[in-house]
Image: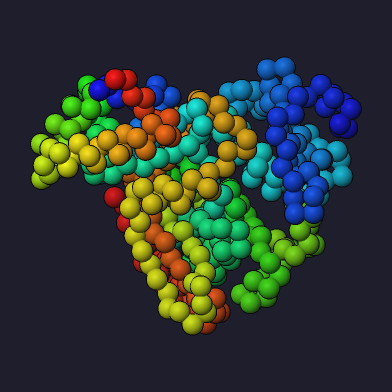
Length: 87
Length: 278
């Protein structure tokens, strides 16, 4: 599954935490820990599998658990227009 | 100059802000390529899209004290926003050793009173009373001195034993007065940001909490002076400047009990926050 960040969203990072600004709506979002890792991974390769691999390698978490959590995060980000899913 | 001379009929207004009494306190519009800002129906700024001033006029009835405050405050905020510079609704002081302390809070949280008390009791000098200009020298945020008066409620003025100057009425708020203050001689590098609020109960003790970057961002955003300018360029500049700001200083939430006797402890708490450069 491809997970494509919106071209209208810009990110700035501090101490591992990310602040995202959606220029379309002028709305800010914050991502920390796993969320920040997912966002960085999607910037390298916009696929769910790449994000899962990045989280599994960075955090002490099983792949299935990571997949469930990341899918929930992606759904939340998609509802806010920050990413778009393509099957 | 009258509204007719300014050809306000040719302005396409895009934003209107009303005061508590229902009057229009601020309007923003476009006339040709330029922006027109109007305050109180009596002060008008024409400014280019890049934030260069074309003209600042008034209807001839405006109190000079009021006019100076408007120019240093909302007029400057609009010009700065268009130039991509960060401006916050905040008061600010410079400590005796020259570190800037920025004080943010909801309306009524006591930002101006805090600054006035720091000047009176802790040797600080005033930088900003309501509108703080945040500029950068390298990665270090600095605050320019922009005010020579605090603007306080009569109650706060009396409680602090300060003396008002004349009877200037700013907007239609007759409950506050201008109080001359010791002014910082130069811009101060920002040492800390305090977001101040009242404790829910006057009997509670003071609390100080260092905020995470995300919490700090969330708490500072409502205090960014955007003046209705929401272009992508302005928003990106805001994100960049907030990032630099939060990368250079720590942000603290200070809750204090609503008791005048708590003032010395509150001022001690604030003065101990600087310098805390990251």
